[in-house]
Image 1 (cartoon, rainbow over the protein chains, first blue to last red):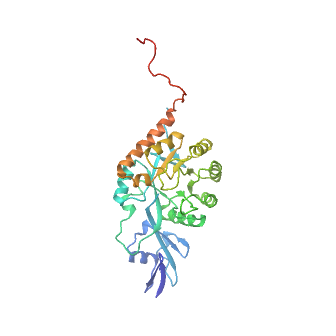
Image 2 (image 1 turned 60 degrees about the vertical axis):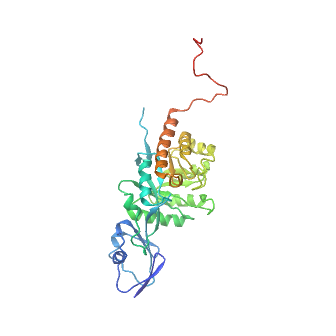
Image 3 (image 1 turned 120 degrees about the vertical axis):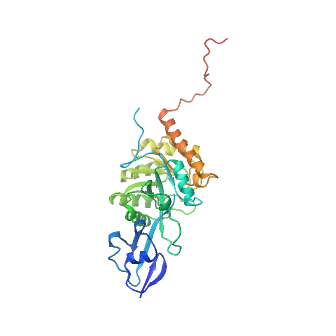
Length: 67
Length: 257
């Protein structure tokens, strides 16, 4: 069981989750976002390769309206 | 006459009006206003994805970044590090190199923190970003930003979202006359005539959000801004008449009965 922080919310993932799998779980289109894991930006080619582990802090951002 | 081209770094923009996409009632209104404004570039903010409400509409569904240039901003950032983090994420999202840097120093006035702004500009330029910089209307600091490699200087007209119009025409004029990079008035424009005045002063472009989004009829106001910016630019290029102290009759006195 991995306890991670996703966009400031505590969540638990019960089996091995890659970034790609986690994005799918939350129905997030990987083409429209950027991911930061523990303060480091993750290249989108690596979403399949990187697995989330306990105490990871992940931020997923996208564009919204702004001036 | 030479064609009047608006070039930011290596990109040619069709319109000298750049519009913000915040504060609208909904994305449909945003998209309609953007279309009416004729803008070919819009500013956007970087924020957390809402992981709870998955059905929430997305800006990209209404404004396709393939058809309109996105200019990611750093709104809400209060130091250089936060703004660098935001723009690096923006670049990762879709390769955006042209960005709007905005480092705020004070929550009430949203006045830019120029020390942090200069710091962030230096790093961004080094990292290959094309940086459009929101800044105070200080002519010396504007020049400093140019030395650091900013692609455009964006002095405020008055506080962000205040709609108070151009408060310091003289400083703006100093900045314009002294600059070798485009000057875009950003923040504080209240109504279409403010944009015309900015363009008549010789600005290269205008960035408007609240004045359109907060108008009673945003789509109509967007069109009004489109015309105001074109009008102001034409007026600047045409060159205004000299002001005279006394009257000078328009009809000839010869042949007067």
